[in-house]
Image (cartoon, rainbow, N blue to C red; front, top):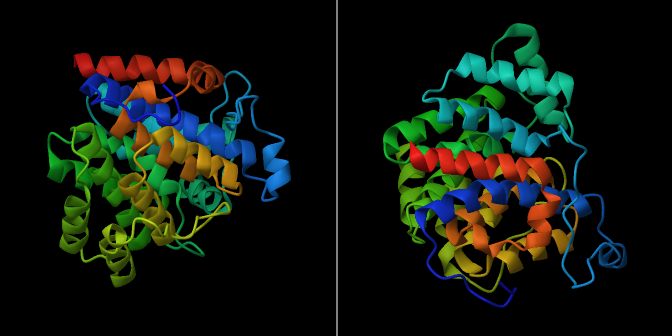
Length: 302
């Protein structure tokens, strides 16, 4: 697979594995340049073939963007979701590892730890809930349950409607990709309207199809707004047909959080399948790539 090729229609198994593994790769690629904005410094981190390199982690450690989703994924594989247990898994990871926890996520997890209840107010809406709820897309056989579940998961980490509905928007888009359709925007808009989404979020999503040449601003920093984040993510998934190119461009721009990277990688993997990702990226993903590939196959056999 080259950066200039467009993948053939992937199988459901390929899309499922691409979705789960893509989140790991996207987070690792974004982490490699998250602290950089200077083009020369970013260029120095490229591989010999001109592609960004995924930043590996020491064995046993997991980035926030994928650790949050892993907890939900494990429960889905087990056949059911217990929100109290899910929150406990997040807190346990945060206390034992906690790598790349952004300030808003730290406040939410600390509140869960101390009070065993979701925080009622954060200084601003965050993006952690978007990545945490991603695996809910695998429950698309029951769309209403999928949307309700994603909302419940998101609200454990962020009380704002903006963050919860941004998370649901991404989950709905990913579910459509996993089902083999690239036409996801009508479903996302319908869900936003049914849940009385803020006008800013609804208008931003409605505008995505209008201009394929002018991308929305890249959501840089550790805590960009959920509306800006989901607008850019869905615009990219809608208008950029080559997943490898889109993920590489994100990393080469610099300044993007691993949470945004994980979400984009998952969306593109769900759309294009596992074969879109280069072998070097898969190898750099380490044991988490292997574990998620196994989980994808288990979900397929269920």
